Image (cartoon, rainbow, N blue to C red):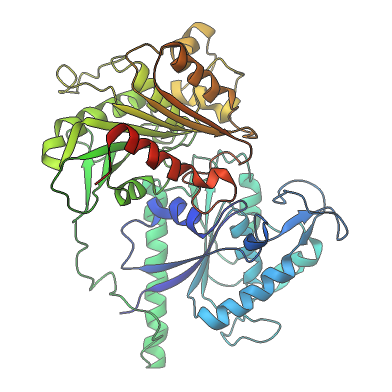
Length: 511
Protein backbone atom coordinates (compact mmCIF):
# COMPACT_ATOMS: atom_id res chain seq x y z
CA UNK A 1 0.00 0.00 0.00
CA UNK A 2 1.15 3.52 -0.80
CA UNK A 3 2.12 6.03 1.87
CA UNK A 4 1.19 9.71 2.17
CA UNK A 5 3.18 12.42 0.43
CA UNK A 6 3.28 15.67 2.40
CA UNK A 7 4.64 19.05 1.28
CA UNK A 8 6.43 20.67 4.24
CA UNK A 9 6.76 24.46 4.53
CA UNK A 10 9.31 26.17 6.81
CA UNK A 11 8.91 29.29 8.93
CA UNK A 12 10.33 32.81 8.68
CA UNK A 13 14.15 32.78 8.76
CA UNK A 14 13.89 29.06 7.98
CA UNK A 15 14.70 26.78 5.09
CA UNK A 16 14.04 23.24 3.93
CA UNK A 17 17.06 21.95 5.87
CA UNK A 18 16.14 23.85 9.04
CA UNK A 19 12.59 22.48 8.97
CA UNK A 20 13.90 18.96 8.37
CA UNK A 21 15.87 19.28 11.59
CA UNK A 22 12.98 20.87 13.48
CA UNK A 23 10.63 18.05 12.46
CA UNK A 24 13.09 15.20 12.99
CA UNK A 25 11.82 14.24 16.45
CA UNK A 26 8.16 14.57 15.53
CA UNK A 27 8.32 12.34 12.45
CA UNK A 28 10.87 9.81 13.70
CA UNK A 29 9.57 6.28 13.10
CA UNK A 30 6.80 7.41 10.73
CA UNK A 31 8.56 6.47 7.49
CA UNK A 32 5.96 3.80 6.74
CA UNK A 33 3.19 6.38 6.95
CA UNK A 34 4.48 9.38 5.05
CA UNK A 35 7.15 10.94 2.87
CA UNK A 36 7.82 14.55 3.87
CA UNK A 37 8.96 16.81 1.01
CA UNK A 38 10.88 19.86 2.27
CA UNK A 39 11.19 22.97 0.10
CA UNK A 40 12.71 26.45 0.29
CA UNK A 41 10.65 29.61 -0.10
CA UNK A 42 11.17 30.99 -3.62
CA UNK A 43 12.47 34.26 -2.15
CA UNK A 44 15.40 32.75 -0.20
CA UNK A 45 17.69 32.85 -3.22
CA UNK A 46 17.05 36.60 -3.43
CA UNK A 47 18.12 37.12 0.17
CA UNK A 48 14.67 37.18 1.73
CA UNK A 49 13.76 35.21 4.86
CA UNK A 50 10.36 33.74 4.21
CA UNK A 51 7.35 33.28 1.99
CA UNK A 52 6.52 36.99 2.10
CA UNK A 53 7.32 40.23 3.90
CA UNK A 54 4.52 41.61 6.04
CA UNK A 55 4.66 45.39 5.65
CA UNK A 56 2.33 48.23 6.56
CA UNK A 57 1.08 48.83 3.04
CA UNK A 58 1.80 48.07 -0.59
CA UNK A 59 4.30 50.92 -0.89
CA UNK A 60 6.23 50.22 2.33
CA UNK A 61 9.86 49.10 2.06
CA UNK A 62 10.79 45.54 3.00
CA UNK A 63 11.33 44.88 6.70
CA UNK A 64 12.09 41.75 8.67
CA UNK A 65 8.58 41.34 10.03
CA UNK A 66 6.91 37.92 10.03
CA UNK A 67 3.53 39.59 10.26
CA UNK A 68 2.36 38.49 13.69
CA UNK A 69 0.96 41.35 15.71
CA UNK A 70 -1.66 44.06 15.65
CA UNK A 71 -2.47 46.27 12.72
CA UNK A 72 -3.28 45.62 9.10
CA UNK A 73 -0.50 44.22 6.96
CA UNK A 74 0.24 43.73 3.29
CA UNK A 75 2.01 40.51 2.33
CA UNK A 76 4.69 41.70 -0.08
CA UNK A 77 5.79 38.72 -2.16
CA UNK A 78 2.54 36.80 -1.86
CA UNK A 79 2.01 36.65 -5.62
CA UNK A 80 5.45 35.13 -6.13
CA UNK A 81 4.67 32.49 -3.51
CA UNK A 82 1.25 31.79 -5.02
CA UNK A 83 2.72 31.33 -8.48
CA UNK A 84 5.44 29.10 -7.07
CA UNK A 85 2.89 26.90 -5.27
CA UNK A 86 0.76 26.45 -8.38
CA UNK A 87 3.81 25.50 -10.46
CA UNK A 88 5.29 23.24 -7.78
CA UNK A 89 2.06 21.28 -7.32
CA UNK A 90 1.74 20.88 -11.08
CA UNK A 91 5.35 19.79 -11.61
CA UNK A 92 6.21 17.91 -8.40
CA UNK A 93 2.81 16.74 -7.16
CA UNK A 94 0.53 15.19 -6.35
CA UNK A 95 0.62 15.78 -2.60
CA UNK A 96 -1.83 14.25 -0.15
CA UNK A 97 -1.33 16.96 2.44
CA UNK A 98 0.55 20.11 3.45
CA UNK A 99 2.47 20.63 6.72
CA UNK A 100 3.53 24.10 7.82
CA UNK A 101 5.44 25.58 10.75
CA UNK A 102 5.03 29.22 11.86
CA UNK A 103 4.89 31.39 8.73
CA UNK A 104 4.73 28.12 6.79
CA UNK A 105 1.65 27.22 8.84
CA UNK A 106 0.07 30.57 7.97
CA UNK A 107 0.90 29.80 4.34
CA UNK A 108 -0.70 26.35 4.68
CA UNK A 109 -3.88 28.05 5.82
CA UNK A 110 -3.84 30.33 2.78
CA UNK A 111 -3.02 27.53 0.34
CA UNK A 112 -6.11 25.73 1.60
CA UNK A 113 -8.08 28.65 0.20
CA UNK A 114 -6.50 27.91 -3.20
CA UNK A 115 -7.54 24.27 -3.02
CA UNK A 116 -9.96 22.77 -5.51
CA UNK A 117 -12.45 20.87 -3.31
CA UNK A 118 -13.26 18.38 -6.09
CA UNK A 119 -9.57 17.65 -6.69
CA UNK A 120 -9.65 19.18 -10.19
CA UNK A 121 -7.35 22.24 -10.31
CA UNK A 122 -8.38 25.38 -12.14
CA UNK A 123 -6.69 28.74 -12.69
CA UNK A 124 -8.52 30.16 -9.66
CA UNK A 125 -8.09 27.03 -7.54
CA UNK A 126 -4.79 25.55 -8.75
CA UNK A 127 -4.06 23.18 -5.84
CA UNK A 128 -5.29 19.73 -4.88
CA UNK A 129 -4.62 18.09 -1.52
CA UNK A 130 -6.69 16.29 1.10
CA UNK A 131 -5.52 17.47 4.53
CA UNK A 132 -3.46 20.13 6.29
CA UNK A 133 -1.27 20.25 9.42
CA UNK A 134 -0.25 23.52 11.06
CA UNK A 135 2.03 24.10 14.06
CA UNK A 136 2.43 27.59 15.49
CA UNK A 137 0.19 29.00 12.76
CA UNK A 138 -1.76 32.25 12.55
CA UNK A 139 -4.43 33.68 10.22
CA UNK A 140 -3.57 36.25 7.59
CA UNK A 141 -3.95 39.88 8.55
CA UNK A 142 -3.71 40.97 4.92
CA UNK A 143 -7.35 41.86 4.29
CA UNK A 144 -7.13 40.86 0.63
CA UNK A 145 -5.86 37.37 1.46
CA UNK A 146 -8.23 36.91 4.38
CA UNK A 147 -10.98 36.58 1.78
CA UNK A 148 -9.61 33.11 0.99
CA UNK A 149 -11.03 31.86 4.29
CA UNK A 150 -14.55 32.53 3.03
CA UNK A 151 -14.46 29.46 0.78
CA UNK A 152 -16.11 27.05 3.20
CA UNK A 153 -15.93 24.14 0.76
CA UNK A 154 -12.18 24.57 0.41
CA UNK A 155 -11.69 24.48 4.19
CA UNK A 156 -13.95 21.46 4.68
CA UNK A 157 -10.99 19.10 4.90
CA UNK A 158 -9.30 17.30 7.81
CA UNK A 159 -6.77 19.46 9.63
CA UNK A 160 -4.51 19.14 12.67
CA UNK A 161 -3.17 22.11 14.63
CA UNK A 162 -0.21 21.78 17.02
CA UNK A 163 -0.35 24.60 19.59
CA UNK A 164 2.09 25.48 22.38
CA UNK A 165 0.55 27.06 25.48
CA UNK A 166 3.85 28.89 26.14
CA UNK A 167 4.31 30.16 22.58
CA UNK A 168 5.60 33.72 22.95
CA UNK A 169 6.01 34.35 19.20
CA UNK A 170 2.59 33.28 17.92
CA UNK A 171 -0.04 33.49 20.62
CA UNK A 172 -2.02 30.29 21.20
CA UNK A 173 -5.15 32.38 20.60
CA UNK A 174 -3.92 33.19 17.08
CA UNK A 175 -3.26 29.52 16.34
CA UNK A 176 -6.75 28.67 17.54
CA UNK A 177 -8.15 31.46 15.38
CA UNK A 178 -6.53 29.87 12.33
CA UNK A 179 -7.89 26.46 13.36
CA UNK A 180 -11.41 27.92 13.55
CA UNK A 181 -11.34 28.52 9.77
CA UNK A 182 -11.34 24.75 9.25
CA UNK A 183 -14.18 22.31 9.61
CA UNK A 184 -13.76 20.02 12.67
CA UNK A 185 -10.07 20.81 13.34
CA UNK A 186 -7.99 18.44 15.51
CA UNK A 187 -6.09 20.39 18.20
CA UNK A 188 -2.86 18.88 19.57
CA UNK A 189 -1.64 20.98 22.48
CA UNK A 190 1.59 20.97 24.47
CA UNK A 191 3.07 23.12 27.20
CA UNK A 192 6.06 24.35 25.20
CA UNK A 193 6.73 27.36 23.05
CA UNK A 194 7.22 28.16 19.37
CA UNK A 195 8.67 24.82 18.32
CA UNK A 196 7.75 21.75 16.32
CA UNK A 197 6.89 19.86 19.49
CA UNK A 198 7.46 16.12 19.82
CA UNK A 199 6.00 15.30 23.21
CA UNK A 200 4.56 11.81 23.51
CA UNK A 201 1.01 13.20 23.40
CA UNK A 202 1.67 15.28 20.27
CA UNK A 203 3.45 12.40 18.54
CA UNK A 204 0.63 9.99 19.35
CA UNK A 205 -2.00 12.44 18.13
CA UNK A 206 -0.04 13.28 14.98
CA UNK A 207 0.55 9.62 14.19
CA UNK A 208 -3.14 8.80 14.72
CA UNK A 209 -4.06 11.68 12.39
CA UNK A 210 -1.71 10.42 9.66
CA UNK A 211 -2.96 6.86 10.05
CA UNK A 212 -6.50 8.08 9.55
CA UNK A 213 -5.47 10.12 6.49
CA UNK A 214 -3.75 7.04 5.06
CA UNK A 215 -6.84 4.91 5.69
CA UNK A 216 -9.01 7.48 3.90
CA UNK A 217 -6.56 7.67 1.00
CA UNK A 218 -6.79 3.95 0.38
CA UNK A 219 -10.53 3.93 0.89
CA UNK A 220 -10.78 6.47 -1.93
CA UNK A 221 -8.45 4.41 -4.08
CA UNK A 222 -10.47 1.26 -3.46
CA UNK A 223 -13.68 3.10 -4.30
CA UNK A 224 -12.15 4.23 -7.61
CA UNK A 225 -10.81 0.77 -8.31
CA UNK A 226 -7.45 2.14 -9.49
CA UNK A 227 -3.92 1.59 -8.34
CA UNK A 228 -3.36 5.03 -6.89
CA UNK A 229 -0.55 7.45 -7.59
CA UNK A 230 2.50 5.87 -9.23
CA UNK A 231 4.77 8.50 -7.63
CA UNK A 232 4.25 7.13 -4.16
CA UNK A 233 5.73 4.00 -2.66
CA UNK A 234 5.99 2.24 0.67
CA UNK A 235 4.13 -0.22 2.86
CA UNK A 236 1.03 0.49 4.89
CA UNK A 237 1.40 0.64 8.65
CA UNK A 238 -0.47 -2.67 8.85
CA UNK A 239 1.64 -4.61 6.36
CA UNK A 240 4.94 -2.78 6.80
CA UNK A 241 8.00 -4.75 7.76
CA UNK A 242 9.22 -3.87 11.25
CA UNK A 243 11.63 -0.96 11.19
CA UNK A 244 15.21 -2.15 11.57
CA UNK A 245 16.75 -1.06 14.88
CA UNK A 246 20.17 -0.92 13.22
CA UNK A 247 21.78 2.42 13.90
CA UNK A 248 19.34 3.63 16.56
CA UNK A 249 18.62 2.60 20.16
CA UNK A 250 15.93 3.89 22.51
CA UNK A 251 17.27 3.55 26.05
CA UNK A 252 15.24 4.41 29.19
CA UNK A 253 17.19 6.42 31.76
CA UNK A 254 15.69 4.84 34.85
CA UNK A 255 14.80 1.24 35.76
CA UNK A 256 11.10 0.46 35.51
CA UNK A 257 10.26 3.61 33.48
CA UNK A 258 10.01 3.93 29.70
CA UNK A 259 10.51 7.72 29.91
CA UNK A 260 12.56 9.81 30.09
CA UNK A 261 14.81 8.05 27.62
CA UNK A 262 17.79 8.52 25.31
CA UNK A 263 17.73 8.14 21.54
CA UNK A 264 21.17 6.86 20.56
CA UNK A 265 22.05 7.38 16.88
CA UNK A 266 25.13 5.52 15.66
CA UNK A 267 27.40 6.53 12.78
CA UNK A 268 28.57 4.09 10.13
CA UNK A 269 30.63 1.16 11.38
CA UNK A 270 34.15 1.92 12.59
CA UNK A 271 36.91 -0.29 13.94
CA UNK A 272 37.95 2.46 16.37
CA UNK A 273 36.01 3.77 19.36
CA UNK A 274 34.12 6.92 18.45
CA UNK A 275 33.33 10.07 20.41
CA UNK A 276 29.85 10.49 21.86
CA UNK A 277 27.78 13.64 22.37
CA UNK A 278 24.67 14.02 24.53
CA UNK A 279 22.16 16.54 23.15
CA UNK A 280 19.89 18.60 25.39
CA UNK A 281 17.37 20.47 23.22
CA UNK A 282 15.85 23.76 24.29
CA UNK A 283 12.34 24.64 25.38
CA UNK A 284 12.57 26.97 28.43
CA UNK A 285 12.24 23.96 30.75
CA UNK A 286 8.60 23.82 29.59
CA UNK A 287 9.50 21.08 27.12
CA UNK A 288 12.70 19.23 26.28
CA UNK A 289 11.87 19.05 22.57
CA UNK A 290 12.54 22.66 21.61
CA UNK A 291 15.24 23.93 19.27
CA UNK A 292 18.09 21.62 18.31
CA UNK A 293 16.03 18.87 16.71
CA UNK A 294 18.00 16.61 14.39
CA UNK A 295 21.31 17.23 16.19
CA UNK A 296 21.85 13.58 17.16
CA UNK A 297 21.40 12.58 13.53
CA UNK A 298 23.74 15.34 12.34
CA UNK A 299 26.41 14.25 14.82
CA UNK A 300 26.15 10.66 13.58
CA UNK A 301 26.76 11.89 10.05
CA UNK A 302 30.02 13.46 11.31
CA UNK A 303 31.21 10.20 12.92
CA UNK A 304 30.06 10.98 16.47
CA UNK A 305 27.53 8.86 18.37
CA UNK A 306 24.64 11.33 18.81
CA UNK A 307 22.45 10.91 21.89
CA UNK A 308 19.29 12.98 22.28
CA UNK A 309 18.29 13.07 25.95
CA UNK A 310 14.82 13.58 27.37
CA UNK A 311 14.72 15.40 30.70
CA UNK A 312 12.04 16.48 33.13
CA UNK A 313 10.22 19.75 32.43
CA UNK A 314 7.07 21.58 33.36
CA UNK A 315 5.40 19.68 30.52
CA UNK A 316 5.98 16.42 32.41
CA UNK A 317 5.17 18.01 35.80
CA UNK A 318 8.81 17.78 36.88
CA UNK A 319 11.31 20.33 38.14
CA UNK A 320 14.65 20.38 39.95
CA UNK A 321 16.16 17.96 40.94
CA UNK A 322 14.45 15.72 38.33
CA UNK A 323 15.79 17.68 35.34
CA UNK A 324 19.35 17.66 36.68
CA UNK A 325 19.11 14.00 37.71
CA UNK A 326 18.03 12.97 34.22
CA UNK A 327 21.02 14.77 32.67
CA UNK A 328 23.51 13.29 35.13
CA UNK A 329 22.02 9.81 34.78
CA UNK A 330 22.25 10.03 30.99
CA UNK A 331 25.94 10.92 31.13
CA UNK A 332 26.68 8.10 33.57
CA UNK A 333 24.72 5.58 31.50
CA UNK A 334 26.56 6.47 28.31
CA UNK A 335 29.91 6.34 30.04
CA UNK A 336 29.09 2.99 31.69
CA UNK A 337 28.03 1.45 28.35
CA UNK A 338 30.75 3.07 26.25
CA UNK A 339 32.49 -0.24 25.54
CA UNK A 340 29.25 -1.90 24.46
CA UNK A 341 28.39 1.02 22.17
CA UNK A 342 31.84 1.54 20.68
CA UNK A 343 32.31 4.92 22.40
CA UNK A 344 35.59 6.25 23.73
CA UNK A 345 34.77 6.92 27.43
CA UNK A 346 37.26 9.81 27.51
CA UNK A 347 35.55 11.61 24.60
CA UNK A 348 31.95 12.13 25.70
CA UNK A 349 30.61 15.66 25.36
CA UNK A 350 27.36 17.57 25.76
CA UNK A 351 25.59 19.85 23.30
CA UNK A 352 22.93 22.13 24.78
CA UNK A 353 20.56 24.60 23.13
CA UNK A 354 18.93 27.52 24.99
CA UNK A 355 17.58 26.11 28.29
CA UNK A 356 19.24 22.83 27.33
CA UNK A 357 22.47 24.84 27.36
CA UNK A 358 21.76 25.78 30.96
CA UNK A 359 21.32 22.11 31.83
CA UNK A 360 24.50 21.13 29.95
CA UNK A 361 26.58 23.83 31.63
CA UNK A 362 25.07 23.03 35.03
CA UNK A 363 26.24 19.46 34.54
CA UNK A 364 29.72 20.59 33.48
CA UNK A 365 30.17 23.09 36.33
CA UNK A 366 28.50 21.08 39.11
CA UNK A 367 28.57 17.38 38.12
CA UNK A 368 27.90 16.26 41.70
CA UNK A 369 25.34 18.87 42.58
CA UNK A 370 22.75 16.20 43.42
CA UNK A 371 22.80 12.39 43.40
CA UNK A 372 19.45 10.74 42.86
CA UNK A 373 18.89 7.80 45.24
CA UNK A 374 17.84 5.60 42.32
CA UNK A 375 21.02 6.29 40.34
CA UNK A 376 23.06 3.17 41.01
CA UNK A 377 25.96 4.61 38.97
CA UNK A 378 26.33 7.85 40.93
CA UNK A 379 28.99 6.56 43.32
CA UNK A 380 31.25 5.07 40.64
CA UNK A 381 30.75 6.90 37.32
CA UNK A 382 31.47 10.60 36.68
CA UNK A 383 28.73 12.81 35.26
CA UNK A 384 31.16 15.53 34.15
CA UNK A 385 31.35 15.76 30.33
CA UNK A 386 34.73 15.82 28.57
CA UNK A 387 33.73 18.70 26.32
CA UNK A 388 30.88 21.24 26.19
CA UNK A 389 29.10 22.80 23.20
CA UNK A 390 26.55 25.53 23.90
CA UNK A 391 24.22 27.20 21.40
CA UNK A 392 22.57 30.51 22.47
CA UNK A 393 22.38 29.12 26.03
CA UNK A 394 20.58 30.30 29.10
CA UNK A 395 23.53 30.47 31.50
CA UNK A 396 22.55 32.77 34.32
CA UNK A 397 19.56 33.14 36.59
CA UNK A 398 20.81 36.55 37.74
CA UNK A 399 21.95 38.27 34.51
CA UNK A 400 18.95 40.32 33.40
CA UNK A 401 16.67 38.30 35.65
CA UNK A 402 13.06 39.27 36.29
CA UNK A 403 10.13 36.99 36.94
CA UNK A 404 9.21 35.42 33.63
CA UNK A 405 12.49 36.35 31.92
CA UNK A 406 13.68 34.03 29.16
CA UNK A 407 10.15 32.59 28.90
CA UNK A 408 10.12 31.70 32.60
CA UNK A 409 13.09 29.32 32.33
CA UNK A 410 14.13 29.84 35.96
CA UNK A 411 10.60 29.39 37.31
CA UNK A 412 10.08 26.31 35.14
CA UNK A 413 13.44 24.89 36.25
CA UNK A 414 12.49 25.10 39.94
CA UNK A 415 8.78 24.51 39.44
CA UNK A 416 7.74 27.64 41.31
CA UNK A 417 8.15 31.40 41.42
CA UNK A 418 9.36 33.69 44.18
CA UNK A 419 13.02 32.84 43.61
CA UNK A 420 15.44 34.67 45.89
CA UNK A 421 18.84 35.76 44.60
CA UNK A 422 20.83 33.31 46.74
CA UNK A 423 19.00 30.36 45.17
CA UNK A 424 19.34 31.77 41.67
CA UNK A 425 23.08 32.34 42.12
CA UNK A 426 23.56 28.71 43.08
CA UNK A 427 22.33 27.72 39.62
CA UNK A 428 23.90 30.55 37.61
CA UNK A 429 26.62 28.62 35.86
CA UNK A 430 28.97 31.51 35.08
CA UNK A 431 29.61 31.69 38.84
CA UNK A 432 30.78 28.08 39.14
CA UNK A 433 33.48 27.62 36.51
CA UNK A 434 36.78 26.31 37.88
CA UNK A 435 40.04 24.99 36.48
CA UNK A 436 38.66 21.46 36.20
CA UNK A 437 36.01 22.53 33.69
CA UNK A 438 36.23 20.85 30.26
CA UNK A 439 36.88 22.80 27.01
CA UNK A 440 33.95 24.89 25.74
CA UNK A 441 32.59 25.86 22.32
CA UNK A 442 29.88 28.51 22.63
CA UNK A 443 27.99 30.73 20.19
CA UNK A 444 25.05 33.09 20.13
CA UNK A 445 23.84 36.14 18.20
CA UNK A 446 23.94 39.79 19.17
CA UNK A 447 20.30 40.36 18.24
CA UNK A 448 18.91 37.35 20.10
CA UNK A 449 15.76 38.94 21.50
CA UNK A 450 15.00 36.12 23.94
CA UNK A 451 18.25 35.20 25.75
CA UNK A 452 20.73 38.09 25.90
CA UNK A 453 24.15 37.40 24.36
CA UNK A 454 25.69 38.48 27.66
CA UNK A 455 24.86 35.04 29.07
CA UNK A 456 27.29 33.43 26.63
CA UNK A 457 29.80 36.25 27.03
CA UNK A 458 29.86 35.93 30.83
CA UNK A 459 30.38 32.18 30.62
CA UNK A 460 33.21 32.59 28.12
CA UNK A 461 34.85 35.21 30.35
CA UNK A 462 34.54 32.89 33.36
CA UNK A 463 36.25 30.15 31.36
CA UNK A 464 39.09 32.48 30.40
CA UNK A 465 39.61 33.53 34.03
CA UNK A 466 39.81 29.85 35.03
CA UNK A 467 42.19 29.11 32.11
CA UNK A 468 39.65 26.79 30.51
CA UNK A 469 40.00 26.47 26.71
CA UNK A 470 37.03 28.30 25.17
CA UNK A 471 35.99 29.16 21.62
CA UNK A 472 33.33 31.89 21.76
CA UNK A 473 31.62 33.32 18.68
CA UNK A 474 29.13 36.20 18.74
CA UNK A 475 27.38 36.32 15.38
CA UNK A 476 25.90 39.69 14.45
CA UNK A 477 22.50 38.45 13.29
CA UNK A 478 20.09 35.61 13.81
CA UNK A 479 16.95 34.97 15.89
CA UNK A 480 16.82 32.79 18.96
CA UNK A 481 16.21 29.09 18.41
CA UNK A 482 18.00 28.54 15.08
CA UNK A 483 19.14 25.05 16.03
CA UNK A 484 21.57 23.57 13.52
CA UNK A 485 20.82 26.53 11.19
CA UNK A 486 21.73 24.39 8.19
CA UNK A 487 21.20 26.45 5.07
CA UNK A 488 20.68 29.68 6.99
CA UNK A 489 22.16 32.81 5.49
CA UNK A 490 25.15 34.65 6.89
CA UNK A 491 27.99 33.39 9.02
CA UNK A 492 25.68 31.76 11.56
CA UNK A 493 24.66 29.21 8.93
CA UNK A 494 28.19 27.81 9.05
CA UNK A 495 28.48 27.30 12.80
CA UNK A 496 28.24 23.53 12.48
CA UNK A 497 31.20 23.46 10.08
CA UNK A 498 33.19 25.50 12.59
CA UNK A 499 32.14 23.11 15.35
CA UNK A 500 33.28 20.09 13.38
CA UNK A 501 36.71 21.65 12.83
CA UNK A 502 36.93 22.46 16.55
CA UNK A 503 35.94 18.92 17.54
CA UNK A 504 38.69 17.54 15.33
CA UNK A 505 41.19 19.88 16.99
CA UNK A 506 40.15 18.55 20.40
CA UNK A 507 39.44 14.91 19.57
CA UNK A 508 41.35 14.21 16.38
CA UNK A 509 39.98 13.32 12.97
CA UNK A 510 36.43 12.02 13.31
CA UNK A 511 35.86 8.46 12.02
